[in-house]
Image (cartoon, rainbow, N blue to C red):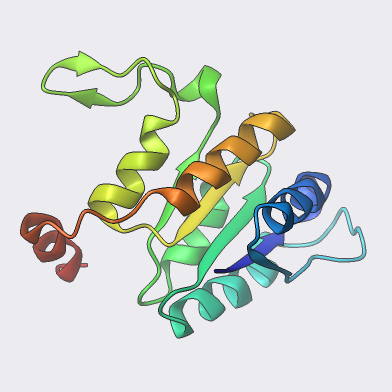
Length: 160
C-alpha cells in the first residue's frame, strides 16, 4: 500500500526511520518532505500536500510528524476526506483510552481504535514524545488494523 510521509524540522529524523521501516514491511513509502532541514519551516507547508495526496487516493495512508503531532493533525484534518489521529507514545497514551469505564493498558489501542472506529487515514506522531521503536510500532499497527465497517461508525464518519 502507498504511505505518504511528511515532517517538519522536528520530525525529519523520525521520518527517515519510518520510511526505512515501512519499506522493509513492503509498503510503498513516499517521502514528501521537508528537506532540507530548515529550523524555521512551517508544518502546514509539508502536512497539507501529504494530506491532499491521501484525500485524492482512496487506498492511500499518510503519516505526518512534528514536535507534538497536534498542529500536524489539525492541518491535515482541514482537508475533506482526511481523518487524522494523533499518537503520543506509550507514556502519554497509557490508560487514556476508556471503554465502558475501564482504562486500556495497551497504549497502542488508541491507534487501533482510530482505524477500527474512525477509519483514520493519517497518523500524526509527536516526535518529542516517542522513541523510534514506538513510532514504528504505531505505524505498523495503524497500517495493519482494518476499519470495522460497522454501520454506526460509517454513519458517524459521514457526519464529518
